[in-house]
Image 1 (spheres, helix red, strand yellow):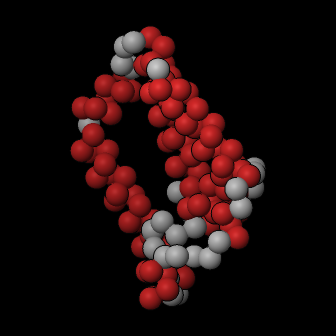
Image 2 (tube, rainbow, N blue to C red):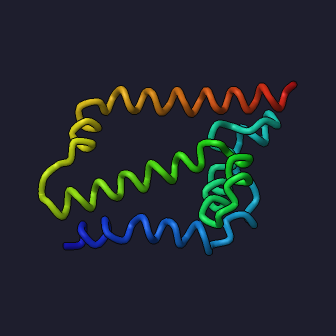
Length: 125
């Protein structure tokens, strides 16, 4: 029962926190940024998600282009979890994600680091 409640409320609570908690007033704690002066691949992700939940889509992309993708992936995971919970059967998406978990993880990490490298390259030139 607790697992079902956690699943049902996880994404809406995430969106509410991103929308109403003033994370943007906190200073950056990224050691990579403080040491090099360049953003790491995840720098700006929190502010990007906050901007996205406030419908500032352009600003969200400026903070971190992967922020909207992160929100979309969480939404997709949440919908898939609700469907699986409701029907008792794993969806085709869930089966694919289980079967290709390694490929998806490596692809996600490569996308994250490629985006980070492009951001550093743009700022350096």
